[in-house]
Amino acid sequence: MLELSPTVPLQPDLDCPFEERTIAMRDGLKLYCRDYNPLAGGTPVLCLSGITRNSRDFHRLACDLAGQGRRVLAPDYRGRGKSQHDANWRNYRPIRLLRDVNALTHALHLKHAVVVGTSLGGLLTMGLATLRRGFISAAVINDIGPDVHTAGVSRIIKYIGHDTTQTDWAAAVRYTRIAFPNIGLLADGDWLELTQGSFVPGEDGLLHVAWDTGIAKTMAAGARSPIPLWLLFRSLRHTPTLLIRGGKSDVLTEETARRMQVVKPDLKRVTIPDAGHTPTLNEPECRAAIAELLAAVP
Image (cartoon, rainbow, N blue to C red; front, side):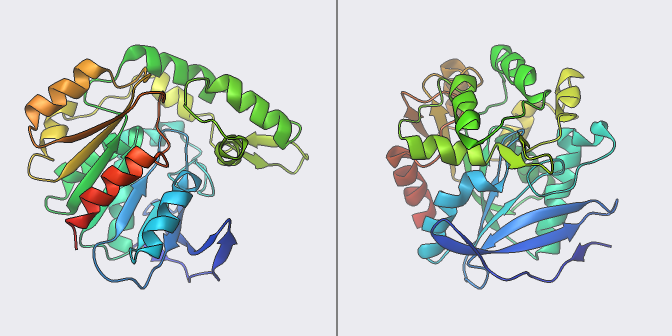
């Protein structure tokens, strides 16, 4: 039986508060989740991060949406952020993560949600649409599609399989700038924010990556969806959906994005020309498109 831990006091992080929740999965592993504006009515927003990313990536978006009266939930998958690591790296397969996300929505008593999925989170959004018909009121798919370009996957596997420890935050920022040259960030504060979601302080005084490096083994093993990804995408055919693409993305090609529009003619599309994989969702074009999507969801 799923266990929902008592809510801890509100956490002042940057410029808006949130509640921290811990949800126990059926196998006993505990997942962490940020809960912004938890008492808000209306349709909540569920934010699903990329392969090694975590809830911190959505903080600015969540603050804005919470300020507009939305409840926003951002979980950390197993092996990421503040969630527990799994002793068995095979449990980092996307199908296991999908089951976790589904279990989390039930534990939090979510009947409907707008789902924002970045990279892997976008694939999980498609899977959730298949698994829970009618659950997703609207979807944002950030720089991912049913055809995933192999160049981007190879690049990701190379850096996530190693704990690239850093001596301090300045060194970590320098490393992040080199590791993500095409992400499209300009301000120093943006780079620091991205870096703080990538590393965590260790007991040895060094900064360590904020994910279990065993995740790379899952990717290298070539985990496949039991259902073709194009069929998963078709599960969103009746759902208002926004597709965001980085113009320099090496994961979502323009060809795949165009094919997605053919499959779903009402698909809304936004391209961020100077961004690679992935746009941060803090870009003005992204915010405007997300606001337009949410305006139609009470």
